[in-house]
Length: 295
Image (cartoon, rainbow, N blue to C red):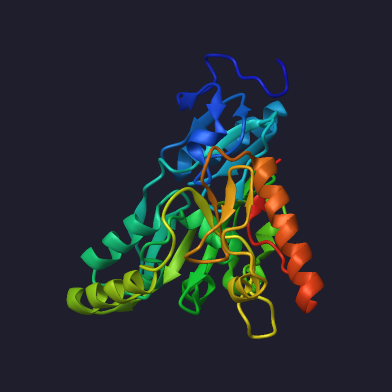
């Protein structure tokens, strides 16, 4: 069997073959991957990863593909997409959430169960797996603050990592340095009431109301440690509206790059490099990407 091909009979998984990265990423860029498989729950994901490992087939695991930049020439490996996974179970301390659950689905389940603590994710277009991978946050609150433990696939086994073992920091985690695949997580939440939860959701949604609409990856750069946001450094450098091909720096929020006119991933990369070079030359500030380059 070819390393990156799958027989027609390979598992009972929904599949897209080939898989168009430009139609499935929030930035709308990228070429084709040979195939994408969509497990429906944690057990299917675990079984699929075990079989792929046994068969020596490489894969890339993704969720909503909202903070990633796929390559123009596509991928040569199989894509495993978790966004069909929607399992949420009550626990003594909160909920266990499968990796593919979206922020919106999580918040709806929390509101139904009168559980408070995840409202900062309101409006964030991520899956739990993606949030756990990069320690996603909003309004100064990060997912690590409500994580009790993370369940991962590691070399054919399920391993539960307490939050202290996940090495969470600002937009970083252990998972960025390992081959672990996030299966789900136990979240620690508080008992509350539907009204308070709804009010907090509205608060965080209002905080996001100013963000640009359109095809983007969300914030491109991490905020430097000097107390000034990446967006402000870009704006101070006069780069709002700067365009490379079809990619443009948003006029509403300078830390957003929009696919405005059929941008390629190369357009986006060139624009990112120009921003970094300009801000470094003018202010001595190094901007580091928070987005993930797929390869």
